[in-house]
Image (tube, rainbow, N blue to C red):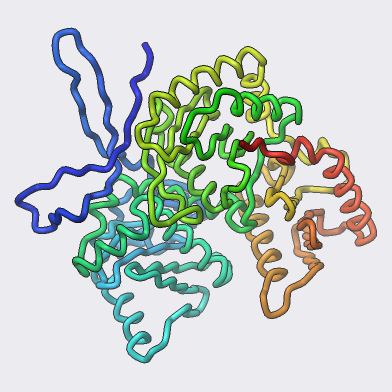
Length: 486
């Protein structure tokens, strides 16, 4: 039986008994509208808020009784003063300028009102002196603040990440909220009622904030400010782009094929490109909730870098497990026309075996062993020209969670040191107990290579140059060199 489409709309219903009602302000909570037709009755619409998927905790008990970052055990209702809540290595808090809780990464924000009040008081203390608090260092903990009136964003971390890295993550959380409400609506809400409880409008979308906070610990896209493309032969990628170009619908802004959070191809206007951070938010929406996996979806979406003041409309449909078609339109009534176009796209992709090749490439990531460079353990390469990066799947010692997390933090350390504004570096060499990491930045690329700790420097240099030659030879399948335009 064919799945019915899912329309995610703005709920414009107002309760006459609510003190928060205002005719000029429409609630913006995402809701799923499922429609089904029956021979015995009129079409019935059921409205169900998107539910949070899975747990929000990152505590994994270890044999030593410690806790590992990135897992999922404790539930949302964990008490703020419990031992497990305090064991998390990184927390995020969002509150309004009036001190009202909006969202917390762990625990229940409704139970953290007193903590939010303390945070608001600290911020206000500095504001009263015509100053702005940016960070606090307390032992191994770092407190980083981002003030985006009318909201305050705070990170508390002992992961070793720098102020700028944590502040960038807070900015992504801010943009995630903007993608739901737009900057205009957010400002208007608090101009009308400074102590408004924003959770009412965000109800059901916290899952995307949760997912984003999790991605910060295992995805370097945010740090590199780049897109990771699916490694795919150029002929297949060009075929996919050609299929999107044929018969495109009116009022189309962007159309793309995405496989497991990696871009396959993107159709765009000739004079407009999508900012990587907007695509990161879009990919987070695809993976952050299983709602979009079950049927065609049509949802309003604000892309902050494109235009933070208004909504576009996104059509999302998974055509294969992990493979989706996303179409961004300026017309809110374009759903059925895009749905028909999607059917033609899928038929063409199946006929030419494009979908099969995309699925196979998505299921099998390339590994560093395929490059056949002695001692090379892992690498990341970013093309500054195309604002895209490539990195192999984890193999060897990095199939182990502990080693993989250590490598992730080492990449962050090297990247941050090389990009410090006061003293940026072109080369940076780190020899730790477990591995050596070399960072190399030029005008056209950034390269980060990892070798065993006993590797001689001449071998590291020669192997890095060999890797660059391999990337140059394979760049047409590692990157999207010529995005189709209209």
